[in-house]
Image 1 (cartoon, rainbow, N blue to C red):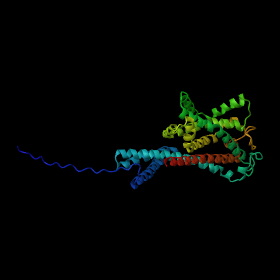
Image 2: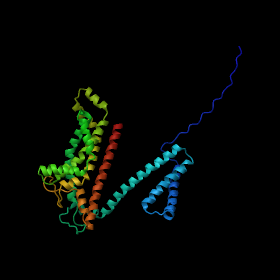
Image 3: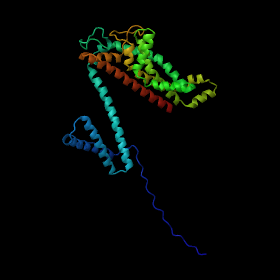
Image 4: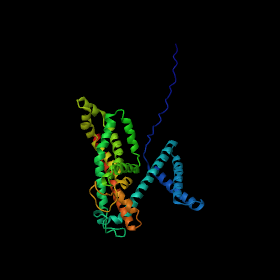
Length: 364
């Protein structure tokens, strides 16, 4: 038998794999984006100002952004495939929207503090009420002490009422469960989008009309609590859902009851995140105006008794002063709005810090 040797076949060389950088940017990418931005800006300026029968800043910005996307796509196509072009355009759109939102927020905050800086420069603005100050009096007389104290009292009462109710509702939805869990969850989710004026009307009808009570800080606290309750309940439910089931199973295996497990294991584990839920609820309630407008009444005096007499808050004072035609009162309104805005921003910063610390603690 004759053996025929087969010719040796040489395998083709392996293709060198090129690692793709996801989300990274090189110097060429940055220069391409900057060049596209300035080039499209110059092109649109020439066309928009000299050739096209159009005008207006908004139209100019829209035309420039569209021209930037087209030019950026063309420049990127010179060195990259279609997938990279789509990635670059998507990143440009996302970053553009983020910059637009950030610019809007910066303008709101900056304009408010800029208009209110004159009132904030007077020390009496924080330690006096408006009992001796009129619309024509200078900023050196009168302040928003009554609104600061009223806000603190109303929010404190609302927290005392809504915190146990919100956490209890979250425990019921996440730990107890049952036939009523679904309708209760539906109601809570619907209440998160409840208009604040509806909450104010509800307390106005039930407490002031039917029960016969007068306008007071307590009634305003109840109205604010109606707005805070679904926020706290919904956020607390999400927090309790994140607690590992292994902790519950270990507690039950040791002979603990369900309520003992909830009280001694689940709630302590979720305590930092529950604090975040509470802060978010406070941030929602502290800026409510229409419920307080219907239920608290209005006064220029400092009132520390929530059960007797009108009690104003910072949003209500801001609304009342902003309606005045006098420039001094409008400056006071922006000053009160600046304090309110600073409090809300501070609450959100605290919520972020607490959430980050709880996340780091959970990873450890």
